[in-house]
Image 1 (cartoon, one colour):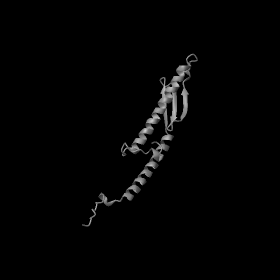
Image 2: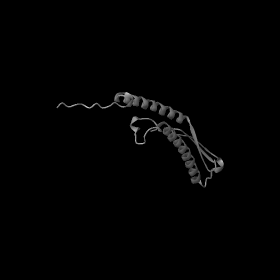
Image 3: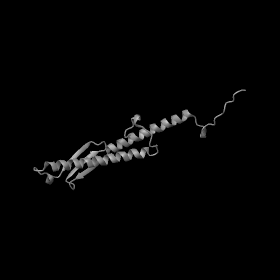
Image 4: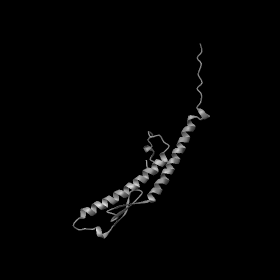
Length: 128
């Protein structure tokens, strides 16, 4: 008795596996371009953190680099340098937190359609 081969129906739309892979690569390349644009835009932004009721102000760029610190001279007490140090740390931390949140929000908006279990870290896409 001769064996008969079963014909397996093609996927809806008649797309072949190679075309799906090419399409996925194209989408990943577009996503990488979007990430690079978002990273550049984020690096141009500045985030300001304050402490001590505005006595200390720190400005951080989107890439988390500290740009400037402004200290109200009235808050400087030679007998309590630790307080000033704490105010500086608090202001810088707040500015960095804001920049990190903006970065995460930007990345989330670009990856919103991806399933959570996909790891794109090996693609060297900034922000992932």
